[in-house]
Length: 151
Image: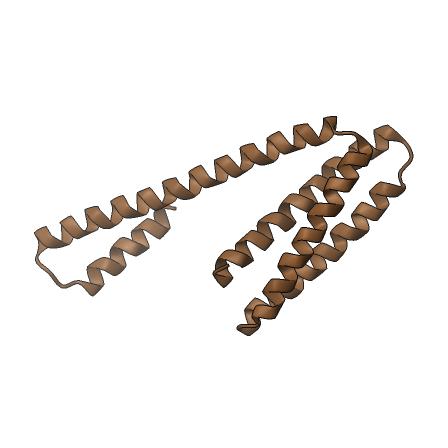
């Protein structure tokens, strides 16, 4: 983080041949703006983390059939979102991202099938934790791609 801040400050100094007082004032404003942006990102991450933790606790107390239904519904919604992103087209790197989302979704579907086939409750709950992480990372990746696509 310090290296990024120093790089931004050095770049600002190189690009703006102004008087020293103006440059210092601009650097202070730039540093303050950068600090505020980092704070927003940090807060957003903390809120998202708390939401995921709360959902994980809820999932552990949700009945098995209800959990499987909710998971299948979520996968269906994300598949629809991925299909919309796929229709967006765009640059090659974005198409690569959408392809990765499709692969991530396919992996999650296989993991759900494996989870559904487990008969032992303790083993089901143990694998459920791993499956939750798969769902959360898929959700985050879809949201990030949607933001990038402007959706």
